[in-house]
Amino acid sequence: MEFGEHLKEWRSHRRLSQLELASEAGISARHLSFLETGRSRPSEGMILRLSAVLDIPARDQGLLFSAAGFRPRFATAPAASLSAFPPAVAEAIGLILARHDPYPGVVFDHEYNVLTANQAFLGLAGMAGITVAPGDNFLDAYLGPTPLRSIVVNWAQSAADLVRRIRAEAWLQGPRSPLVKRIERLAATEDIKAALEAFPESDRLPILPIEMKIGAKRFNWITTLTSFGSAQDALVQGVLIESFFPADAGTRAHFEEADAPKTKRE
Image (tube, rainbow, N blue to C red; front, side, top):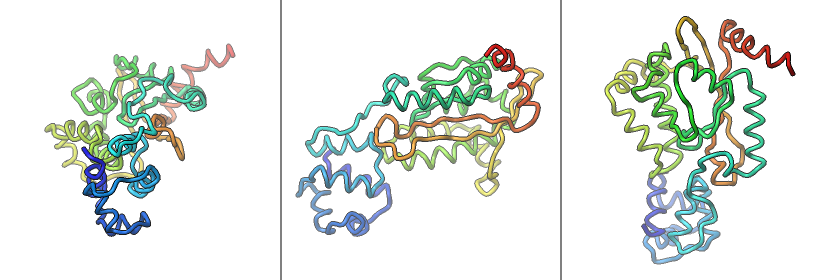
């Protein structure tokens, strides 16, 4: 695709007219039209200005630079592990996960592929007979036909909530986001359709606890998502750290007791 085609696609995705985008970018509608049709070639500064207005993620800006004949300023390939991240970022992620013990924590990239997890998360997965490794996709595991469906008591309600949240995130990532294709593929299955119908948008709760039953044990969690503010690195942008917090005394006691011997040794 030419630069103008990419630009028009992003503008249409953000539901802006040429006049609206031109006004926000501080250029004339005529000049924007010329950029979209290829009659004008953008400068690097113009690409950055338009990308800022259209809220184009750094990893996708590289495609615009390439299409315009410039060297990409940002990496476009996703990271396979924390080793690909800037050292300060990798250290911060490790610190967050370590400090969150004895409760589970896991790190995803912008497509919800697992990058790393703390021992508590791996232990919880192990209790459920599930193996977690870097590169595994969380959405496939949670929404697909996997053992998690029999472990999460309120799976249908939580699946409907997850699909709606991911759809909103995927829209922000842009018209060609792999996340869009993945979530729509998963949402097209009959059981996800049924879950969305049974738990409509109007019935969403402010916070939805995740209820798990593993053997005779029951765990209740609420989760938070942490991202890096003002991320300028394409690899860092979109990284999410999901932290699990106990939603009842029984869950808290189980994980704190499991961690007690380690705490005493320290």
